[in-house]
Amino acid sequence: MRIIDLEKTDRERIFQVAEILNVSFHGHCPDYDDMKDALQKVAESFDDHQLSRIAVDDEGKVLGWIGGIRMYNGNVWEIDPLVVKKNTQGRGIGKALIEDFEEHMVRHGAHTIWLGTDDEDGRTNLGECDLYPDVLSKAKNIEDRGGHPFKFYQRMGFEIVGVLPDANGFGKPDIYMAKRVKSAAAV
Ligand SMILES: CC(C)(COP(=O)(O)OP(=O)(O)OC[C@H]1O[C@@H](n2cnc3c(N)ncnc32)[C@H](O)[C@@H]1OP(=O)(O)O)[C@@H](O)C(=O)NCCC(=O)NCCS
Image (cartoon, rainbow, N blue to C red):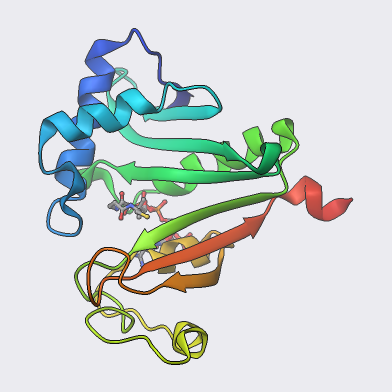
């Protein structure tokens, strides 16, 4: 496996990325259930101030995708999205994409990487309930109920820095996670 830029002209791999979005998020997030929306998401990753990297196998087929959005004058980058092909999840591809992203952030001089990871289907104890009052103490006591990706990000060194209640409808929060870029920590 290797990790390369997703090129704007690479129509075949753009379609493969959109298919991965469509299949891997199905059942957890409806945003890419329509292939047109998935393709639009990939197209947006070619805007200025964005990073778009793909993991490919020995034959050049796409295994996963990570997108990055520059914010706060480049001090902060958002990961949006990160996705690995369903039948190749759990083999270190997500981890490799995060590590590659972090290497780019060091070169860009970024301080912080962050992301929002939604809970739209009650896969944590923050979903399917009212988070008010005292949202932050509930966020502190987050528990996984069925393979929610916040655990993956914790494994990658991210920590929860906030929760937006009802971001995707009542009882469907967005969980905000962040990590300091290593080079910034050393300054
Ligand atoms: C979340 C996702 C990107 C992780 O990628 P992956 O390739 O499956 O993960 P990796 O194999 O690289 O896992 C790296 C480590 O995290 C752990 N991990 C991965 N997913 C995990 C989960 N849901 N819960 C707990 N640990 C998890 C692995 O066990 C591994 O641990 P190790 O370092 O001790 O071996 C992938 O499962 C995916 O695309 N899911 C669907 C889309 C999605 O939810 N994207 C994130 C939206 S914010």
